[in-house]
Image 1: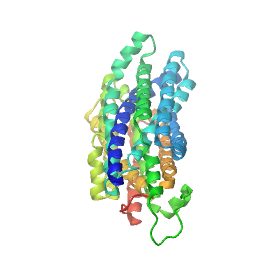
Image 2 (image 1 turned 90 degrees about the horizontal axis):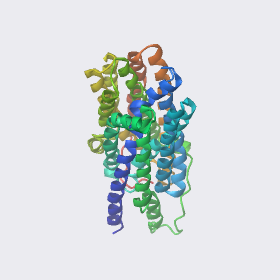
Image 3 (image 1 turned 60 degrees about the vertical axis):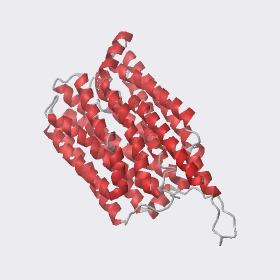
Image 4 (image 1 turned 120 degrees about the horizontal axis):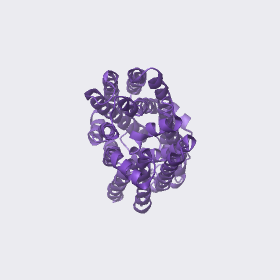
Length: 425
């Protein structure tokens, strides 16, 4: 009966998380196509165009750790609501930055905006708290897939958002951030009202209520949280999974943030740039359920390795893409998203199932922190590389991270990793 009850709660949890992801993703992706352009206009330098996205990624990295600590103490609901509210305030600050012409204010807003990315990352882990071991990949991927709705619609609202901004008398490039802030507020309300009971707290209560083995005379005691470094030492596959997550995210972010600038150099307008970004995020999220099923069926290691291979292919196409709109940039950005999806669904599932329950949010927060820092480094370098050497050189630079994904998959395979057969923890 307890398992049946958990199954019902799990299905409801997935529906709530999917809804919030769809709305929250709209909030975070609608400004992707314009962030680098607004930063360039405010700073007056193409070399600094990637700073807004870099700061946002850094905000997501720090936010992931902070939200993980909050969720570890108070559950998933508190952490997710906090992330979306902080992100909404960041979107509002980005609008103000455009109005007053302040690059510093834009960077502060972008940093706070990163908290929404942190919440989105945490939501995929929340989907695994009550999931059966054999379906963790599918449960995680359902939430990732839900991001497709907002992520694909968001960039395509770039043009209409610009029109709205003109009618409101604010800079055209700030319109997407205004709409994004509204989406994040809606996501916070959905989680705050509907995510009950809290899946992480319920998982902990269920384990505490599990009868001790008959041979055990002493009653069960609460299991203390363990340091992440200790867990990683004992579980080398977790370290490999985190490395793969970080490398895949660095590839995706460093190329994606500079694509609008590369296309604008060739005369592409905001609508066309928005379509390319939509194709990219379609690859990131739309096929996630199939990716999750593949991870459950063929193994996390295999799926991560295929993801690394697709990332390399995407970078080759991007390197061959001329400025402006081209078939190469459309296909390259789509494969960039699909390769990211394969690597991150596989890596995140490994982290979720190997981390002990008492420390699961700490391990997940460390994974997202590492992922964010790697992506921030790639994003920071991307603006300088494109400004000085060009977009093809950036694709070559990013291939280093794509190879690292393949190395991480190889190392995870050598640890003898295989999914557990019982509830994690």
